[in-house]
Length: 614
Image 1 (cartoon, one colour):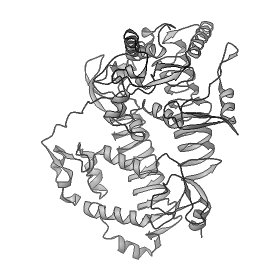
Image 2 (spheres, rainbow, N blue to C red):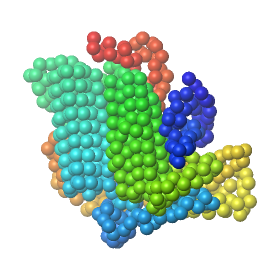
Image 3 (tube, one colour):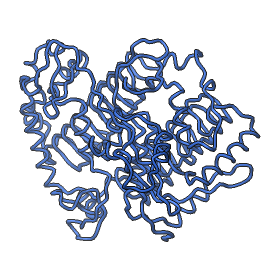
Image 4 (cartoon, rainbow, N blue to C red):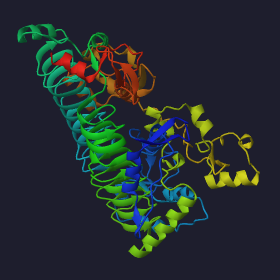
């Protein structure tokens, strides 16, 4: 039942709040000193909220910078133009410093987020998050791995390259959102695969090339939507001898042939019906790429989730709302990003993990309980602004802060984007909600060119008697209405930078399109050169282990920068937008992530299953 119709205060898109939303707000509103502090209804649409959360997540950009503790050069998630304290992870995890030494006392006369920004700038951050991994310096979010290179948010990798958000991957490259993969290349949304290339949405397959939505298939080439098959080409069955004969001339190491295979498969895909939404074993769920889940609404790229709404990515969780990148937990997470490993009762926070509990408005806490407005604590309890309190004093101070936040109308508002430690143009927000340099600067007051605190900005506005929108100087153009007065809008301000990575130190940089078509004709001295991406002209290198992988698996050397290859994988999946469209078979109205103008044949689930299992 619809309880409230309203508009997003940023984009003005219509929003509908249902009775189930208010039930959730009441159920999970925190109780402090026996008093419930209710969650207020969201005033921001799910897209704008996700954009803000993702602006705090640099998933895959690495830089060289010096450790602010030792002065030694290191690989870091933070570019050298950022004014934060970044320690080498080994120093960070040592006893050479203490996060409680940076404690602050909350001042209700100062703007909340300016105080938190001060704490974020004072407390050191580790350069990378790599745990129990060997020979894997150029990665982040890596656990229990060996010989990994440019891999992000993975666990249990071995001899893997350019792989993201996956687990149990071995002798493979360019894998995304997959599990139990071996000797494979360019695979997406897949599980339990062996010796497969250019495949997606598939499981329990081996020796497959250019296949989608294929399960339990072996020795198949250019197939779509088949199950329990072998020796198939273009969905047509052959004998084993016929199949081997036809596959004899297939050569993935020849770049010219590879381009023709890709075009051929794309043309073939347009002749086969597609299901309107990519779901499997999903009960009472809505959106796309939802698997083995129940009661998941407006969820995308999730597996084994239950009772969730507005959740974007990852697995094994329940009671999660308005959050992104959450896994392995069973109790509420609201308005947060990067929360995992049995943490619960996490509200409007970022990077909270390893059995953390009752966390509010905090950054990067491990194994902490009952913390409010804290930054990079490990194993602490009853802390506010990194200051240690007794249990009874903690509750009193938290009540004082909440009441002040409610008075200022920021209780249950996510962090403003200026608090992000990353430039917008290097975050995942720019992948799904791209903004040009001009758009960011038009929205921004903080950039590499303009570095002023919000306290300074508001002070400047007051000094200059700025009382209406037209009087605001350039780069200070975002306003909001509240209590019938106009107030400077802090929320949608993004950071950005023009920082450019130094060119690789090589003998020569050559255009990738000048390489010989056949991989066997590419000489070893490619290791001493950089290649210019065919699409962006951005330089990239091929390392020794990577070249060996391409040769061993008879693959073409990539002509695109790894960022461009990632972008191609991203675009190969339907985007996070639901459209109204008619089933091309029965003509009934359906929801789908295929735009009505797209050329694919799109069926409702019933018609698609009738086609597949006929």
